[in-house]
Length: 372
Length: 249
Image (tube, rainbow over all chains, first blue to last red; front, side):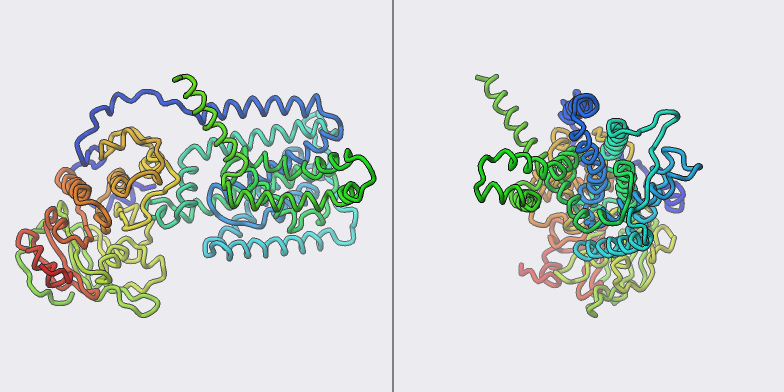
């Protein structure tokens, strides 16, 4: 982060410090061999699982499951955006629903314009999300913790109010045009899922590359200790702003996809409960993990339907079965809450943290057996 | 600067890298951190800043590094880095100018690996052991800093500082809570850094004996003022400790 210009005015020490060993030089310094990288293994495993699940969604799933998958994919993108800010940069935000609303309304508004050929609506939505994220980020530079959360909550109410006003008397909402790339129209849920799978893959690959490099280390340092990061020369202001801007852009993209998925956009879904749901996705799946964000989206989106299908199978006309059938949605909310509590108390790494522990345990057992 | 008690011959005759004049710090609650401190830090020297708790040692380093102004603490006076006035510079600006600060606390990130730490500060250098200053680092690249001992964390912090090619190194309480053998190793490392590279170091310490073993010059602070300064060769650690640090011989 230093520049020649900055350093030019000050005299250099006689020797370059990077060539100095403070103690005896390491004897085996040059003998370091290639290291086994379990992260690479996990990435390949993740890619294989992604391809298999994508093939199932596109070619094997029922119409209902395809519809469910489309929602999961949209919210997986949103959860990954939220995780960027919270899991990577350590900044709390309750504004995810607001950023999704910006993306959804922008797409619905401009997708019918002749100049806004696909994928321009998605890109413009992302830009609008980034701009709003910059505004929130500039505010966030002066606030931390609870106060930052409250400021993003204020954003939620401002955007909800603006969206309601913008929608006006049009109760049916704004209609998004069917996206089309050349002559290929994403006119069915199956085709939309193809689009969503590509966007999700691009987001995961792009952000994965960023997280593995210097920006990822800078955000990790800021998340763990802002003061120490500043001391280490990390430009805290720059990286925090970038996290706000990038995260908001990704969540706005999710909003744009939501507009295409729902075809009609109203302000009603983008309320505080949606923001909380996205938070729950990130925490249950595992803060600081894109895989966790996707798993969280799967659980939060599908749990109500799983519960419904289970309660439908409960035989008999007992009071419990009828209660379950009428209250499965509320039960799902209670389960989210319980799961969130369990994660916060017992496993901060969420489901991905649990899976990592299982993997470590399996490797240990396998090694013991090998030795035996 | 307040009149020092004694002023033996000053060994720091090299070109000053850092000069402060009339540096004063007042915190929001009215507490005075520094009062009219003027000093110069020549190239190729280690300057020990001694004093008891609350004497203003850390305030001095944080004021020089630009952190106090960024925390809205009132800082008056001048700070010059190689003749360039930098009193109003932000911590980032000071870092770009080559002022590297190793604080007393908050210097490593428990969740990051040793390799991550080296990569964080050594842009483009990877985690190759070109400047891995302590031989244990080579074998612990994948260890998380949270798993390191207190001494290893200090060494990692020092290795990170060296990796940033400092023009001026500010080190705060390096010996805090460490075994004497580790303190000796750290102090030797600092001396070696200055001897080989010429990087001037300002070392804040409460362990007067450890600091005097490697320092060229000594400043003793009390109530935000420099009350004694001189060459470490002419300084009796016991006397300094007894007179200014409240340690009985």
